[in-house]
Length: 107
Ligand SMILES: [Zn+2]
Ligand SMILES: [Zn+2]
Image 1 (cartoon, rainbow, N blue to C red):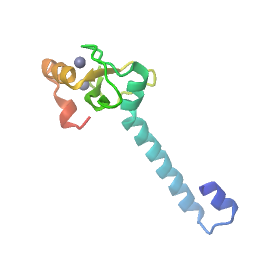
Image 2: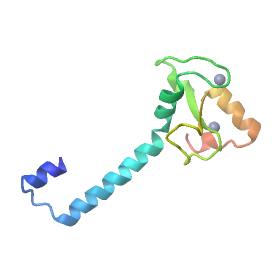
Image 3: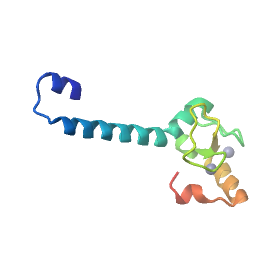
């Protein structure tokens, strides 16, 4: 859209374009980081890796993504740091490992 505006001769200063682009980059990065849940569910399926409980589209919100190394910023594209766990198993995982950070950090 921005590109089309430019071609039509919109009176947008060049530095504003650059700022727009920067914003775009930031937005894209944030989407990457927050999208890992969808990507993990897609990659590993709607099933809990621990108790093998299966989920449907209707109750998929009960399925969460656990970071194996505990680092929520570590989201390799191959999904190797993700584990789909139902909320019960996830809670158990964290209380056993005494991490407990998952919920306080809001996923
Ligand atoms: Zn489970
Ligand atoms: Zn976790």
